Image (tube, rainbow, N blue to C red; front, top):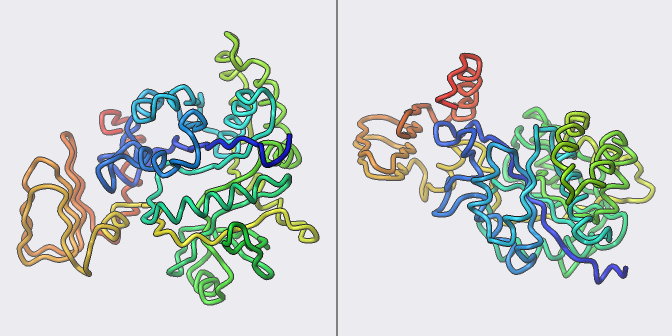
Length: 371
């Protein structure tokens, strides 16, 4: 099939729990299914951004059994039929591969170009994002090319993986494209500062583009056990035996991220670059905590942000979320307060990352009503 005729599909990764957004984020309604920033949910925003690049019946969402029904409620009608439920989490390499074999089956075992995207990221410039995604898809139509979007770093952040560029830029649809030298782990502070100062690194935002054949061929090279099991499963797609086969095979898959399984190994041979990065300055945030939400919503330094009725006297830099109850605060600074019908969170903004520790405590104490 000529590469220009290859169909395009999107795979949205929507199986995370978002534990740092407790008490709003729960097992059945995690971060991506909530309106964390804006009126619509993170998943709805992700799907809407893809219009008009990818039709709804070409949008696949990978989630888990606990979240599948709520995911379907938030998708356009044609995409509801494209929800794939994992019987248990085996990390991103397995989840993407599961979707890839389903897309291939839907295309009658022909190739297609895939956009792999997280469900829970915020993008302030959707028009520019679509232009970059279009360029990435065009670049990925060539066999053996792996394309990633890289976010130009704005600070020496130790919470992200980094992508090191090499060589001079080429172009796709007028946008600069660089060969990737390597993917790096989350660095220490000093090293993150070196990366920022060099101007040669981007943050890895987890947005990938490739042909099904390119992805599966590479995955077979590096994690053959996973591909072998899923190729066995592929024979059962559309049959009554599928659910039982999925439940039996899925625990056998390697529990590994796509970064470790494919992207890092693919950059080791520098003689023939295979991985490319397009810098994407699109107002991106992974919205990793309540503190990140405050930073997005605050229009001025030390502004109080109230999501609901309330009033602050002699206080600065607070994020107060209570859609129905009035919050009154006096003399407090840099706090996060989040109220739900059964719980209230109070945490300093600079400790917002630690909210996930509460969830671990609830799990250890088997406090299911709070999960």
